[in-house]
Image 1 (cartoon, rainbow, N blue to C red):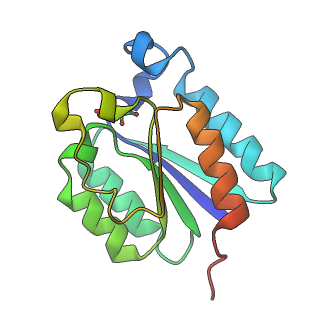
Image 2: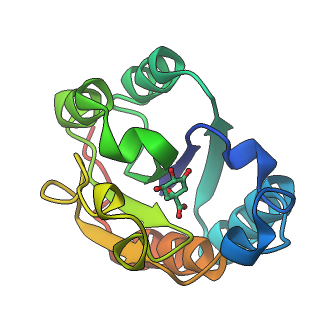
Length: 147
Ligand code: DQA
């Protein structure tokens, strides 16, 4: 199985950004752990982070027909991006929406997501541990794509 891990804006600052909310683990650490978890289930994992909406759209489009599942933390684009939502729906790849923090315990405008009603599942508020859970779930439970 092939998994794509996507992280949106400011997640490159994971580990140093508001650590009381997002913890002390860095994005490279998260990505390495995810790759190892995927490998332990005979899956491969590629990861991509961008602060740019269009770059995330391009990466999603490039995954069409090549990836069985996407794990996406859209960062602030969660609350704003019709374009990323449309890209995910356009390629038809099932995805997990993930947030490190519990967005529902934060500002009211973080409660709405452009992704949740289309996600196969949502992981919220488990800290960076959520990434591991997401990879395991995709590796074990998502369908392998047909040719
Ligand atoms: C986030 C939550 C978003 O509201 C915020 O804009 C982020 C990170 C999270 O992982 O908790 O950048 O997606």
